[in-house]
Length: 437
Image (cartoon, rainbow, N blue to C red; front, side):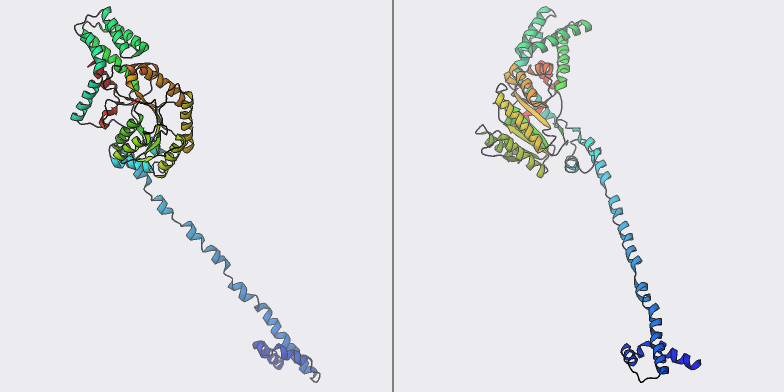
């Protein structure tokens, strides 16, 4: 038994000492004895039995599948969560909201440049009413002086009635005539006179100066709904469409408005949409050079196409306000009024919620015709505001009372001269004082 075990163990310890080729050759040797054949057979079988369990051990133990699959899990879960939470979005928005409207350049720039990224709170903050420009005492006095001088022809007819006058029916008749001559219109005149009669009776007024003061209060109450400021920061760009009849002063008003908006640190772009009048494009370009404002213009072509390109350029350049000039036309020219509607539709295609402001420029000297223009353009375009020009030297300043009574579209600005500072926001009290001062 001991000798057999040694013979069996020796090939098992070194299975490679007996190559497979030698075993095959030994199988074919007929001269070996039976004992030798049995020993070789046992030696050949021993390495095969020990190699079988060893074959799968090494590969199975070496497969690190589970650790490799688990390695990337932790880094992915730990990606930049902390930096996102640390972005200072809320503090920036809150700081801007706390500033008053128009108080500083940083306020307006901060709102208009990042209002889309800061969420709903910015929409609330952007609904700020732009206050009138802060004029010092000297500039304010100069403006009121020009306003009174411009309305002097209208005020002379009204204020002269109350000089040493008795409060009787003759006073009311003279006042009615003066209001009608100032183009206040029948409706507004009757409303003011009836209210004045009632006020004189209820307050028992006995002096002409008291009646004049009562008329001023009634006029202020009538005009106050027209007193509204232009709102900025609602969109970027804020698209303004300017319309009006020939000679009303659209192009000049656009140039003055651009200067006014720049005082609130608003970037402005102008579109020369008046492709009919020969000098309109050149005139607007001159205003653009004065104010250092870009003007989008074409020598010829469709007005809607020019304005469409201007809206796209304003959006690409992050402009705050884009103002589009249009060709002058009478409201009775139906085909030209339809072209204005087309321009409005094209602007809406370039920017879905545009135009944000549709302003009509009217000449105060046209009197009751200006009221007809307001009605026609409002029906066609849906006006959001008025710019009343050429109030200097007019005897028809009462037209604002007629507008307030029959079509109360807000009056954003009034003009009393050719200079840039002659265009100022409308104030009901200042206007009434100029008429009855």
